[in-house]
Length: 172
Ligand SMILES: [Mg+2]
Image (cartoon, rainbow, N blue to C red):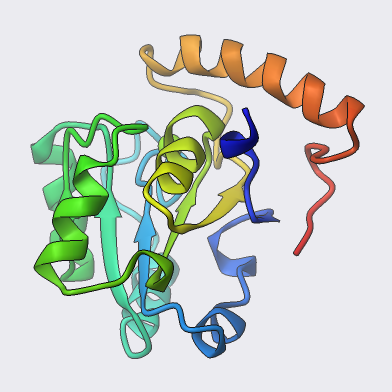
């Protein structure tokens, strides 16, 4: 369960201190897609997000690593002009590993940003990356996510008890 605890927790992708990460040696930001960058039923993302990601690409290699299917993930990757992994089966680390090899990155040079403890954060921790949790953009989740959220609620309860992570109390 320790591996479900993020290293950093922020409200959304815009609040993450990217320059600090850069100074600490992070070279690649791997974003989750659904409810991290875009709402699950959103076909197009706001121009502000596109501009933001494009700006981020000046400092980092930006990737999308998503459990969703290729047509959706690739269309977003095209918008941002970045590489991606679809059907990543997070918390499996295979997508992270593939990208790490492809771009010759060290584990500790990658930060993952996602809205789910049991896929993004657990997968990122297992891959040895720096993990950043953000609040989900919307309340609606993909059907397949409901079981994850159920598990997540139990983990959050335990984290709260131990004063490790409280939803809405952002840290680090
Ligand atoms: Mg997500």
